Length: 373
Image (cartoon, rainbow, N blue to C red; front, side, top):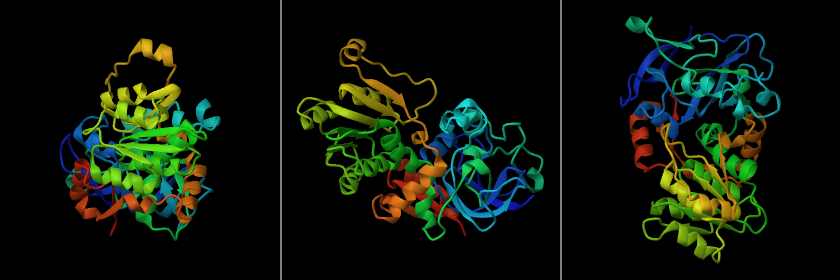
């Protein structure tokens, strides 16, 4: 079993600790990746805080990119030396996977969020030294890429050009594809539409960038942080609203002549903000919900208003994408200067993962990306 250095979380609320671990050798359908860069996502921090019930101790990380180190005997789409992005895991055999909807995989929760192992229960990671026999959970989003080596299924790796900066490529595996996919695959703004984006973290700003590629006439960014509002305007928003200064519901109505937003995307995971996003819709509007609060969180909605105005609320997971086709398309847009993801990225060395996590938690940095030694 190859040795790697990983950032391990041993209990809820604990810091990331760099430890030596062992990574299982690839099975026939698996790929071992030498990680070059990995983004920090809200879900990683939610697990560490104990809000998302992934088993601990564990190696997290799910926006990894790197170079293929070894492949299993049945792998045909990549070879050692190829550059890949790792994305979420799916089984490939259930009805949803077979009809091109891997984000709806029947085994999605077990493969990505709650299992901590392969679907058959076998571990992908082990400790070393005195912890060699202790449980160490991995397979987070099918990869656990807060490590110098990551093991993923062939279905989870996306071949990408090797000449692009890894610190920019890494977030495409989750945050960028989620925000861009929510707009381009799920909400589908039409000519003349207004899109309101609530929360301008990495997902929200990816949505703003993607909206600029559509025929939407107005893109409204709602965020309490002045720096992020300014960045949203730079990246394609036509208007920015400070919810601490103005009622977002009234602001969106004022900007649309009282009509409301045709499309909305809620990324914060705050129930009151989702309510604002839904109430701020035009008649027949659609709201995509991306933000993920703790399990059991409820949202109160005005039922008569829903009956009168006919809004739709759509849960959005990973942008509804097929990573093998969507990520290369997004990277082509990045290369052409039409999806400037580097504007939201700040890099940290892997050893500074604690500092990077703190910067993400405080909102100081939109998308921290760890670079490997």
